[in-house]
View (cartoon, rainbow over the protein chains, first blue to last red):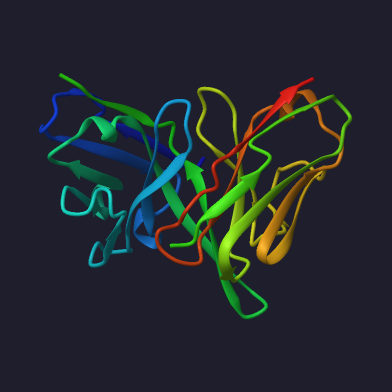
Length: 125
Length: 107
């Protein structure tokens, strides 16, 4: 079974740091780009970051650029999100997701599947 | 950035109703659009990708259509397990934005 399991969430003070982990199973992590998406409880979804197959290329939402770092250890089948200089507005459930794609009629399409169960990060004093 | 606007943001419907949710984009893009269903306390689940392709295992009462800047998700006959929040997402360019969500509740 393809599965993603996040861990590392918790309560942290403003300005603090936290590292999230996402353990992948049921597939070969190195074959997929991976992302983090977050959701303030009761609110909508926000894409946070993406990493390519081997970690040599990354992208970030403007709201976390310079503070968050996405990385991966394919040998350990694990994705990470290092979060520094945390702010109250970073409080959210953080999901890791797999980027899946296919070619249809010569065009490339992709989607997120599966999603992990999420880990809650609370930034508060 | 491509902004996605879903409408309605909330709808109340009965079992057996036909439901249509619209996702409008701020600019034209390829049909690299996905729809997800999220139930309370759970992670989102993929329903449709490439605007109209049903993910394996998803009931055929769900369908997607559209192109350009307007996309729709239709549930042909609403079932009790379909009461949830639905999100569209564009994966054409970064950031991979989501619509604001449509909450489907029981009338």
